[in-house]
Amino acid sequence: MVALAASALGACSMMPAYERPVAPVPASLPQTQQSAGPVSAQAGDSAAWADYFADERLRGVIALALDNNRDLRIAALNIERARAQYGIQRADLLPSIAVSGGQSAQRVPGDLNMSGEPAISRQYSANLGFASYELDFFGRVRSLEEQALQVYLGTEEARRSAQVSLVAEVANAWLRLAADRERLALARSTLETRQQSVTLVRRSLELGAVSALDLNQAETLLQTARADAARYAALVAQDENALALLVGAAVPAGLQPPALDDSVAAVPVLPADLSSEVLVRRPDVAQAERALMAANASIGAARAAFFPRITLTASAGTASSTLDGLFDAGSGAWSFVPQIRIPIFEAGRLQASLDVAEIQRDINVAQYEKAIQSAFREVADALAERATLAEQLAARQALVQATQRSFELSEARYKGGVDSYLNLLDAQRSLYGAQLELIGTRLSDAVNRVALYKALGGGWR
Image (cartoon, rainbow, N blue to C red; front, side, top):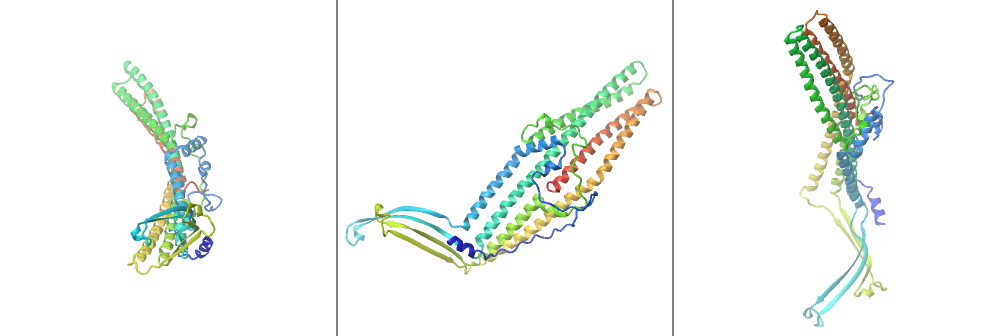
C-alpha cells in the first residue's frame, strides 16, 4: 500500500522536459555520389559491419576480434557495472523490507531499584518492517533513478563506440598487412630482376661492352631493392603483430589477407543526399546525448531538494520478556515513525546545487553540439577524399602503364646501342616508384572506405 501511494504521489516531478538540441550542422552530408534518391537515417545494427565489408576473410578476422579483444571485454564489463549501479538506484523507489529479531538484557543495581535488590530484565522481539523509506512527492528519487538510467545507457553507447573503433582498427591493420605484403612481393621481384641485370652488366664489363660506371649504377639499384625488401619484411612482421594484438589471438592462415585488390575493400555505395540525422546514431554522439539527458534529470533532483522530504519507518511483530512467550496471544507490537524535513535555511546551498546542475546541463548541451560538429567534419573530410581517390587511382594506373612502356623502350634502345645504360636505370627507378605509389593509393582508397564506416558510426544502413 505504501509503495502504491508513493507511486501515485510521485507523479509530481521537478525534472524539466527534455528536448534534443538542434544539430548545428547542415541538413545533408556533402554530396559526392549519385543514387536513386535521398536516404534517411535508420536504427543502428550491431552486425552492420558484416554487411559493410565484402571480403569474407576480413569479416572472419573482425568476428574473431570481437570475441577476443580485451579492450572490448573491458567495455562490456563496464556496462555490467553500470547496470548494477542503476539497479541499486532503482531499488530506492521501493521500500526495503526486512525481518529482524533480537534480545536485549539489562541489569539494574539495587541502589537504583525501588526494591533495593538488583534486577535483570530481558526482552525478546521479532519484527517485519522497513526503515527510512522516502515518499517521493516531488520526484527527487525518480530523477536520480532517471539519471542513473541515462548513465547506464551512455555506457552501452560507449561499448558500441569501442566496437566500431575496433572494427575499423582491425580492418585498417588487415589492409595495411595486405598492402605491405604486396610491397614486399614487388621489392623481392625487383630485387631478383636487378640481380639478373647486375650479372648481365658484369659479363658485359668483362667483354668490354660497358664501363665500370654502368656496373656501379646497376649495383646501386640492386642494393636499394635489397634494402626495400628487408624494410618491407620488417613492416609485414610488425603488421602481423599489430593485427594479432587487435584480434586478441593468432590469425589463422585462412584469414590472412591476399594482395590488395578491389574485392578486398569493396563496400556499398554511399547514397546521395544522405541526411545528417545519420550522425545522431553515432555511438559517441548518442553517448553525449545520454550525458545531456542525465544532466537534465539531475536538475529535477536539485529542484526537489527545495521541498519537504518525508520518510517512513514502520515495523510490526511481537515482543515478550521471555523467549517462550514471544508468540503468545497479546504479544503483538508495532511502531510507525513518520519524519518530515523542511529546508528553512541552507545558506544558499540548495540554490547553488541547482545552479551547478543547470550549468552542467548547459555544458553537456555544448558537448553534444561539439560531438555533432566533429562527426560532421569527419564524414565531410572522408567524403572529400573519396571524391578525388578515383581520379588518383586512374592517374596512378596510367602512370604505371606509361613508365612500363618507357622502361620497355629504354631497354630496347639500350640493347640496340642507341641509348645509354643510365637512361635504362632511370626508367627502372621510375617504374618501381610508380608501382609503389599505386599500391599506396589503393591502400588509401581502402582505408578511406573504412574511415567512412567509422565516421558514420558503423555504416549508414
